[in-house]
Amino acid sequence: MANSDVRSKRLTGTGSAAVGPARIRQIQVLTTTGTPRLTITDGDGGSTVLDLDFIASDSHSVNIPDEGIRVSDIYIETLTNITALTVFYS
Image 1 (tube, one colour):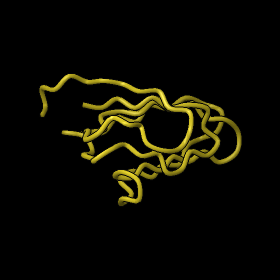
Image 2 (spheres, rainbow, N blue to C red; image 1 turned 30 degrees about the horizontal axis):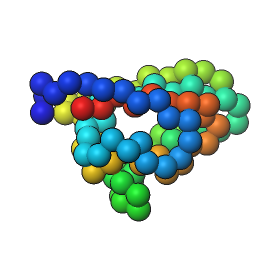
Image 3 (cartoon, rainbow, N blue to C red; image 1 turned 45 degrees about the horizontal axis):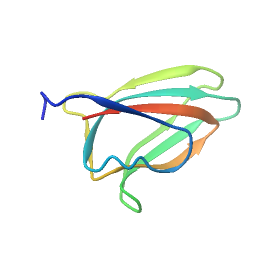
């Protein structure tokens, strides 16, 4: 799957990204004040695959190494003090 086209989706709330099976390659996050946190699960009710805390009032880029994180669907479980995020996936 290393040669698959990379796509992106901007999200501003919790829930399904509705992209189906995917490999998360990178995440861009814009945080606000407080204690920003992002939790992504493997579909709705699935296991946690990514759980990150960020510095407030900044933009962040999270690169996922190797082949990325494989999920049945990108599901945003927690989106605290984050204005928006863009997920790059294939």
